[in-house]
Length: 141
Ligand code: CMP
Image (cartoon, rainbow, N blue to C red):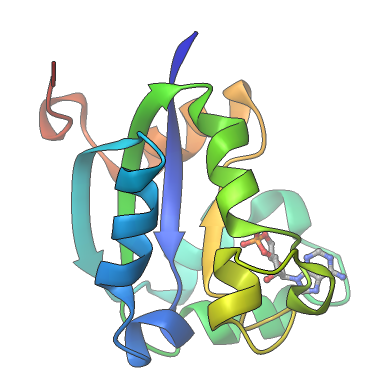
């Protein structure tokens, strides 16, 4: 089915100037960018986005990292977009990511891991609404 998913290019990848290379991977895989913006997350925004991880030992470091510099947030649309984006990213820990994936190629550590992608239809819906008004998402054909 055609799905939408929320993608974030994290501060490490923005700092490395590989936003375009990462977008290119999405496009080459048949995902369409239907909304996009760059922003610097506030602590409140980062904590709210990652609320499900609150209480985990890595939560403070995650919030520190996600607020350390600008990110891009985008909505990707396409057949099986949620799983396809996660395949393109590779494992959360770049040391375990398959060669040729975004995290294997651009990430340094489990914290600075280049990209985020929604992990289920329910989280995609929540995460897209967290960053985008319906009017900011563009219909494409
Ligand atoms: P992300 O997909 O953005 O979701 C939560 C993030 O927490 C994850 O990517 C990692 O960057 C970070 N993180 C750090 N340590 C862990 C861990 N042990 N398990 C899962 N995520 C972790």
